[in-house]
Each structure stands twice: as structure tokens, then as C-alpha cells.
Image (cartoon, rainbow, N blue to C red; front, side, top):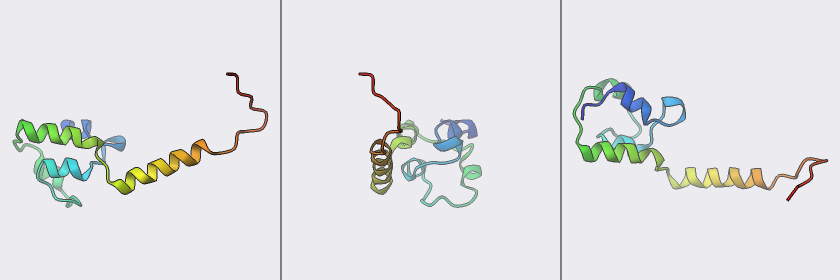
Length: 89
């Protein structure tokens, strides 16, 4: 497969401008990504295995990131309910 900018953006996180370290490792880019890495990788050939790892890597996060997301979710669910709210179940 030949890498294109549209393919990179399609498999990015957060508005098309962020990639995980797992994704970059899959296509041979070190982390943190150096300036200009997108321009250098566009037009290069990658294997099917690299393509699959890159696409799957979008959902791979560091443990610290996952912990932060869990803490945020717990904080949101444990907030006191607004006055006047009545559950209807």
C-alpha cells in the first residue's frame, strides 16, 4: 500500500491531527514524531501488516491515559444531581 495523506487523516484521533505512538511505530516513525514526518511518509510503500497495525493502533493508549479517562468518567458519574431532577425508572 502507498501511504496517502487522506489515509493518515482518516485513521487519526481527535480531529485528524493526532496519532498514537503505536500507530507511528507501525509505519516506522519514532515517538515523539519528528517535525515533517507526514511529508516524509506520504508516498512510501508499507506492507499489509503495517497497514493493519497502524489502523488498529488508533485504539491503543498508554496506561496513564486510560487511568486519566477512567478518573474523569468516575468524576462525571459521581457528581450530585441537579435540584429538581427526578428519576423516572
